[in-house]
Image 1 (tube, rainbow, N blue to C red):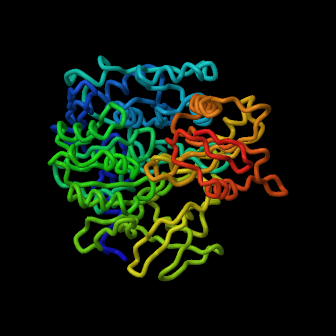
Image 2 (cartoon, helix red, strand yellow):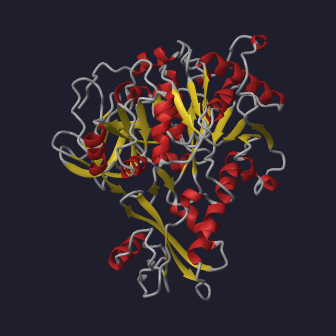
Image 3 (spheres, rainbow, N blue to C red):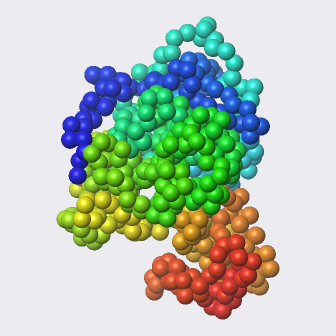
Length: 546
């Protein structure tokens, strides 16, 4: 099903600025000239940056990086709170032809150390809110230089005309620009290799699914340490001429609506978890200017989609993508496309061939359930895994990138999410690799064995649950102990909402953890909601902590 049979990647590349010889630097994307980045502070103030200010400040930051010896091919990490530099730091690194390594500001301890050890950045750009997270890992990276930006840093001030013309390094479109880490079920997080033309790779999504109108202002709370925040709802819509709102505060339904109101934002892009939380806050605070919504990152449930239709007269256009491939399936705003049905992921975006495969990797025609697979069209937004190319190559069957997601195709060609074929947990729109959390848990002296799985939750979509075997007696505050331990070593997003104590975890004869049995035990035990004050019984008859 294709609602733009004339879509051409070559035309998209040309429109995006790729030259005939393939020269292209992502820091040269077009930017809105008047209002580009709109930063809403928690004190109620609003700071706006024009395209000219952004380019000038990119050159200022690039100059500081140059003074530290950063050049073509060097790796520079960035870790920020919600502020403009979370986007502009990437532009400054690319401006020099260097490689940007975005890191989620929720990482800490080993969660940060593992990614830095793998990518080996020479410089870290951060802010005063996030800088303390480096204190626990700095000893492991004695040569790491820091650039700390803050309210009085280079992002502010008038345009300095003495700096000169904006002249990015003459990189090629397929040169490496970004190493973006994503979680998996086994081993360490994998660094997706993203080239300079990643914005071109997202152009079908920007044109047909997000489909912002000229001048339409986009607000997203997505963190720029992930692809959805940095690229999909960040630099890609900016390159299309649409202002992007950044809110520095934590999520709160009334605050998000207030930010949209005072920034003039019309379009909200967020994970379904955020929409569920917005809906639970009621409809009284919804601003009149809210007219459009997009979602991605986890399945959008039909009741939440219907709530926004009924209470805001806004249809949420849900889409599907991965850091490896980009946004490939979605509900399209293209004239003539089938209207969204609550709960459906939509159809293949123009420019992509999408199939479902059975267990033998054969295509399933018509109605059916199978692995979602995307044909390599030369414009997948990642081209490999950093230092782990055999694992990248193993993701392919012939020319098809085979995902770990099981989907159903209906009689109209729409796709519906069923489940993950692997064990990655998508909690509040963020991937949590169970192996990474298990490794952290096993490092605690209380834990003799550990297993981590996700279970459905009506608000979060999925929550992390930890199943442990203890060394000795169970302390009364086990749950809090383990939450703090994992939060320090992996990040708060990966901490368990439920902890279940076992005498022995279910494993196969070869020692492989049987995660399906962990999930089934939770179902059988009928564990209560995460915020319940009571302690339900674990599968072995002992108390589980919430």
